[in-house]
Amino acid sequence: MSVTSSTPAVASSAAVQAPASKPRRSHWTRRLAIALVVALAGGGGALAWGMHEQPSIPPVVWLQHPVQSFTFALGGNPHPVQLALPPLQPLSAVAQLGRQLFFDTALSASGKQSCASCHDPAYGYNPPPGSGPVMLGGPNMTTPGFRPPPSLAYLYRQQPFSIGPDNEENETITLQQLAALGQTSQRAQKTAQSTAQSVQNLVPTGGLFWDGRVNTLQQQAGGPLFNPVEMDAGTPQRVAAIIERQPYAKMFLQLFGPNVFADPKQTVSEALFAIARYQIEDPQFHAFNSKYDAWLQGRATLTSQEMRGYLAFNDVNKGDCAACHLDQPTKDHLPPLFTDTQYEALGVPRNPQIPANQNPHYFDIGLCGPFRTDLKNQTAYCGMFLTPTLRNVAQRPVYFHNGVYHSLKQVLDFYNFRDVQPGRIYPTVDGQVRKYDDLLPQYRANVDVTDPPLNRKLGEQPAMTAQDMRDIIAFLHTLNDGYTPLKPTS
Image 1 (cartoon, one colour):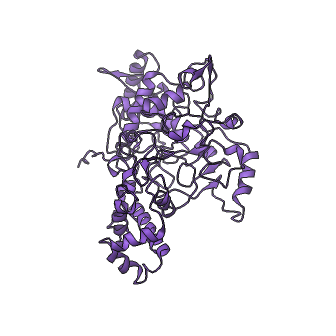
Image 2 (image 1 turned 180 degrees about the horizontal axis):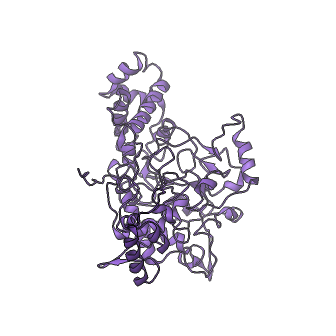
Image 3 (image 1 turned 90 degrees about the horizontal axis):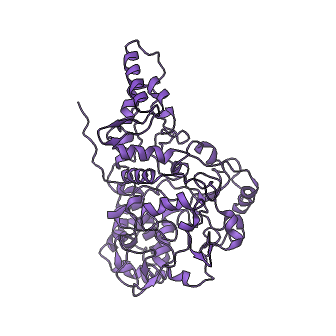
């Protein structure tokens, strides 16, 4: 198996490729037997054992790599890798303090909301079930937000916001200059087979929140704390006074000195720093203990449906999900984050359940506003939102930046039918389908119609069958943290 993000290990022979060596004569008997099975199965490589359809592997691959092919077809990983996982070590004193702050509801105006209220550890630091498209906050827990909270998990490797790859050669170039370059540069099509090329595109990448408006977990923690529709903590003076009365106030004095409460802004800054350290140090925020992680390491076997979903997830002619949600370890063996951290304008339908959307003149256009203002004039980016991780995605109650969908099936239906059967996705008014109805007309040209499966035309065949989508959903469930792997055999 490839260990680079640029070579997905599923849709080609790389999935089962063995180290180069001359086959021994004894292998030919097995190769001929496999070839016979493939031929009897119809020549397409789709085998069936019992009642379960097995994943399709091209006949030529079976012939060239029979042992690896059998391992792969039966749900195993023929080339397990050693992942470079974050070290397991005790939390620092600052991180321990951050843990107490993360769960402290006293900091909110209502006295009922903490960081964990919107980022529940029991659900992959996603919003809790039944929370709706947006959370309620404010002083009485009745004020609706504008976007569903993204997951706080797997952010420890998130890079600062930029336009395009890391700017190593000219660090003095401004964001506005990068934006101008990005709008005139050629863009490589994003597919599961060309991630090495598409990652070099001069497109927005990195940052936190749906619009990347902050760069550090410390800054991110301060957003909900003082947002009037979220925790609504008021002023630094109020927050510092509450902290000074809490049992953990002694830790503040021990860690940050006897004068830490003399300046409320410093008190809050240290509190946000502690929350950030908690997220960075606690392995539960990046556990990498899903079934898929175990499979990558040769410690788990995928079911037939999960393996078919894995193939469809990477198949350019089907889901092509891995084009944006990278599923291969990095060249340094870091486990995949299932996001390229780039921004996309997908044109998801407007969500009438968001109170702000009752105003027909209100539009959430992501990088261009209303919460981010520094790119408001870069109209080529209007409607773009951050590509989130798919880890623990099956535990989210709502999907996309506006929470318009409540199930993974609805999400896959969107990708499958947006262009070929838009009437299934968007509302119809006076006999006309209102496509991209959550974007103003002048920004609709920004919507991605280039990358598969979003490059199909009206009336064409959808990229995925109903079975393909069920299989992909089964695979996505293997990304939930908390899997107990098989014990290694001696």
